[in-house]
Length: 170
Image (cartoon, rainbow, N blue to C red):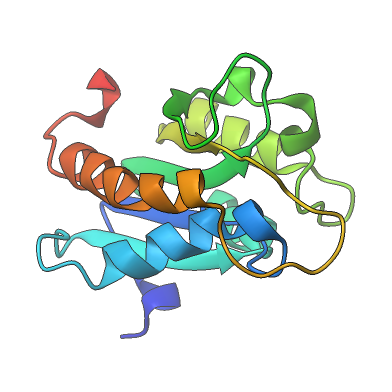
């Protein structure tokens, strides 16, 4: 069974979001790649490098009769008052305005899909964010030093929540 088909049978799903061609925006995919091969990653978890295609996957989950109990999005954000490389959890309501409409698919923002999964699908949804040092407006591959240093901490944090019986205790 390939990873995408596991999306519909996993108890927990982790989607690493972002564009690896734009600096720190590649954090989510880098975390997903590291977590997916980690020996302590639970068998019931589906970990996907969603890249810039998260909306397609979220839309599939919304339409699926079988949903995970928890969905964790990993992404880079730029919010005032945070230090570069800082990791923190966000609820759907706390998503910065530019992130709410990320990866628009047919003008349907990802935040709306996340909200529908949570409210109507009963899925625990949380975003593990890193404060980006820079997300350039041109191709610049590679994470900044503070964001790269946060990668192992993000993997550890996701392993912690994936191992919880009740992920609502974030």
